[in-house]
Image (tube, rainbow, N blue to C red; front, side, top):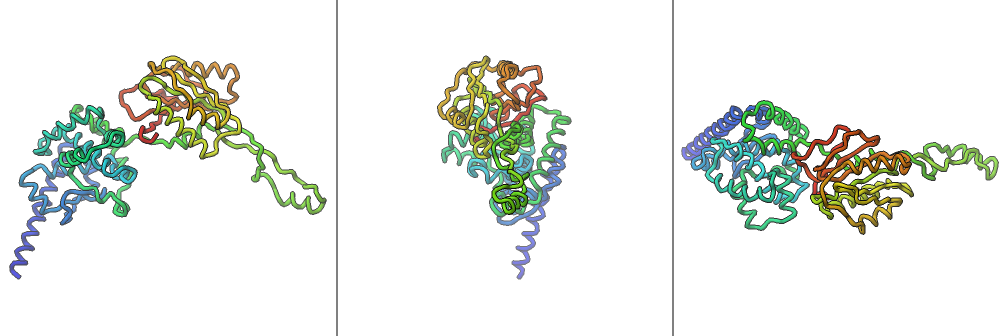
Length: 433
């Protein structure tokens, strides 16, 4: 009986000390990084015996009190480090993309991304004994992935693979929490939505730009925030902007009244009172331009993949007229070719057999000048829009075109020139092509 009482008191003491350590860590981050205050308020500390290490479900930060105290004796900064690590996962909405990815690679990519940010902050109260080795490894990774965001690291892993030895090494150096609460049914219990976390991220991004004094130590944080808060467009829905009205021979069921039609047949024999309309107005892609940047940085296979995706979207949505007027223009720093597509068979043939030419520098202006000439020469009856697939490193025209323009970029890049305000900008991630 006395033994059980002593054990209970000991457990209570462990819980008290662990809670103090976690609360002190939370206060340390709040004082040091004021722009994290709202995000930290959203996350509640909660002891969870047997969890082994830290974890979050997007509403709570779980910790094992006994395990925390044991680790704390060797690593006094472990709680601050864990809170920062988990906080960044939430701010970047890593859990909401979890089941769309290869889980093993995504786990490693997001841990490396957030640990890189923490190491860049160079916060003494969050330092761990493994940091020197972690920095050395990050230096190696950055040679393959210049901007260490979770998406870019993940893309590198998916394209080039990752050995079991490398996975083990990365877990040892970068893993802080487990992500079990992000899996399956456990994820359904998350209280704070992705939309709410994105609002918090937007505020942090604004506060960081406004109030952060040490810009050099927050560069990776800003880059990851840009990626987390970037607006994503559905390429399928964007193509709807390039649809124009046209007529096809079709029974228009919306304007045809079967009552009068059948009454005429019944009363006057083979004489319907109202003939069915043989056409109706539909919205399908009829005239638009696809401009392909064939500069050296836009590899041939990537361009072909973009065309294949465009074709698949148009085909699945049945968005072609029987005859179309689509121009696929290739251009680097000068116009290389113009392939005219009249039918969906022509489009498919170009996707499968068309040759890409150019691979010089990039200048967008020749394409717009050429399209203006086509309009003046009545080549287009009603050109709705132009889609320009490019890396973005080119010269934009100064004059606003008389049609919609969409620049489709291959991945996010903060270094390229800003898109003119008259054009729509979308990002098509390389791994989605």
